[in-house]
Structure formats: C-alpha cells, structure tokens
Image (tube, rainbow, N blue to C red):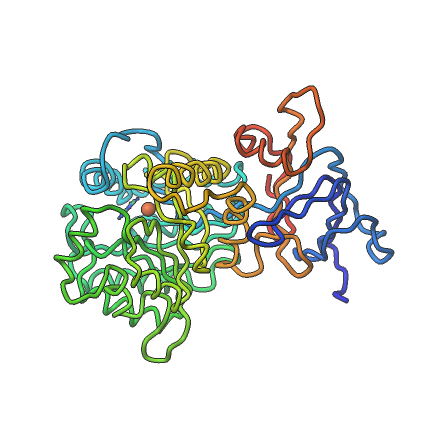
Length: 435
Ligand code: GUN
Ligand code: FE
C-alpha cells in the first residue's frame, strides 16, 4: 500500500466516471480517496486505513473527473464568438493571423493570457493541449500563467514558415527551428504541470525543410506533437497540391516522424491531430497503426462549416480519441458544450449522411471528454485506483426540478444545461484544490 502523506483526503458525494467507452460507473454517497494526488478508488464504505484522512463532504453534489481539452488555441480566446461567418482558410487569413500577430507585444499577451488562464482555472477543464503563437516570449508567459493556475497542460510554440502574412510568418525554416530550440532551452526544468509540445501549425504553413528540422527536434527533445489534419475540403485540396508526393494529408507529417511514430527507431511519438473530418481510409489506418490521437472538435466543425467528422467510424476502428474545444473555431472553452455538440453532430451525421453510423450516446461523449483524451496525459480521466486524482464537484441542485434523477441523468443534464459555467463548487488537479 502507498504510504499516506499530508496531501491526502477523502471526497464524499455522488460519483460518476466512465468505466469503459460506453459504460458509466455511478455511486450515490461514495467515498473517493486521494493519496498524494492519486486515486485509491471509490468506496461504499470508507476502508479502515483511510478513516483518519480529512473528509470533505460534498453530499448531494456530483463528483466527476476533470475535463480533458485536447485542442485549444490560447491566443484565440480573446476573440471567441466573433466572425463566425467565415470558412477555415478565410477565417485564418482575415481573422486569426492578424489576431495572433498581436502576441509579439508581450504586454498584450500578458493581458490576454491572464484572461485565458483564469478561464482555465474556473472551468471544468483540468488537462489541456494548447496552441500558443509563434512568439517564444509570449508562449513562455502563457506557460507561467498556466503553471500558476494549476491545470495540467501541454503548450506549443507554433511553427509556421510559409502561407502566412509577413508579421506572423517565421523568416525561414531554420529561424523557426532556432526559435523553437531557444524556447525549449528557456523553459527546461521550469514547470511541474506545464510541458512543451511540438506544434507545426498545419501542412499549408510548414515547409518540408521546417518539418525536417522539427522531426530532428522531436527526437532530440523527445517531445509530443500536435497539429491539424484534414479539417476542410479546400485545405485538403491545397495540401494535395503542396505535397503531391504524400499518399494522403497525414502522410506529409508521417514522412518527418511527426505522426505518432519516429521513423529512425520506430519509437512512439505521442501525437494529437485535430479535426480529421475528411480523413481517407488510408489515413485512418495509418492513425491506427501509429497510435495517433484524434481530437474531435464539433463546435469548430460547425462554426467554420467544415463538416462532421465520422466519429462512429473512429470509435469502431478503435482509434485513440478525445474532444477539443478548438477555441476560437469553437466559440467556448466549455467542454460540457463539446460533449453535447459531439452527440448532436453525430445525430445529424447519422440522419443526413450515413444511416449506418449510430449516433454517439451521452456515455460515449463523456468518455471521450475524460478518459479518451485523458489517455494522452497518462492515467487520467477516471477514478480507478492508480488514476490521477483530478476532479470537478458540481452543484447540480442549481438546476431546479420537482423530481429526483439518477446520477447518470444528473450528469447528462449538467452537461446540457452548461453547469460548468455557473455550478462548479470545487476543482482538484492531481489532488490539489485549484478552484
Ligand atoms: N488550421 C490551421 N490553423 C488553424 C487554427 O488556428 N484553427 C483551426 N480550427 N484550424 C487551423
Ligand atoms: Fe485548431
């Protein structure tokens, strides 16, 4: 048994987490034991050895795992919910790139990232994979703020050396690589919760030479990778022209060892690809072989009119997968919204596109937002013994009703009624209360 230290406690309340991808575990009046940031499991009655621990009584409230946002752009939080009439490539050039250019100014970045970090503290998200901008100073500032807030995150300084306006485009592949190495050296050993992730923006913005250098940096620093993949039809067509020798979009990353597997040693590279709306069969197979994670971002797919990712197919194939808010393609950082959007778009896909693609159940979408994405971070997203103790306590009594509901129904209603915006009583990350 693990020795019990000072940072150990018991949470009491109505507990819910995903046991498997379509099965919710629920326990009314359960005890969730946290020893040094690690769950010892959920109990009907508190075992003898934990009876001396402080007990925090959330009786009548819901206790669920923290949400895992697999894909969010911190600099875009500032303009969330604006200019939602554009499609991806125009939205990038008319809105996103001019906004991101502002992060050269560290005073502006300081203001914007303070607001973002505070939102990450207050919401239900406990783990996130985050894009910054190309600017290494602002990216470090963002990492400082996230570390202070206490969520677990991967943060990427973005790489982009072509197809962007001069104020945002990096001068050359070599300059982009050099800045990346300088950023990595500057933050080395600096944080406990906040880690770097290699972040080529997407193939249109990254020359072959840059991807080559990033492949080398990945090996040298043993970094995870995040990027965008097959999001929009115009984008996919553009990639076909830019990388004619690639068998498919993802192959252009894979050639450089940036798609789940290092080529030289065959070593796994923890990799997230956001969107995957238009992935071909070949691309899906490669993602499966290489263990690439799909970040499904339904709000963004709707707002940018990108399309609907074939999520049922990915689940059936056994792809690793989670959900992303993709702010500001997505208009909100609420992962409860992402859960409901994922269910809703899957229903439209089933009704309008493919009648054999069964819609997602609530349990499946909840799984994706917790355990599914949590796998990228380790033993995250559940309360099984040995999992990280990251939890959100919800006061769903704020959703008034005349009758009693099952815990499953209460959690579903909390998601649909956006309780993460106004009903979070407490949030714990690795056994530390941060909100
Ligand atoms: N593809 C390249 N950059 C971006 C971005 O910032 N947002 C989204 N949704 N897709 C992208
Ligand atoms: Fe994105």
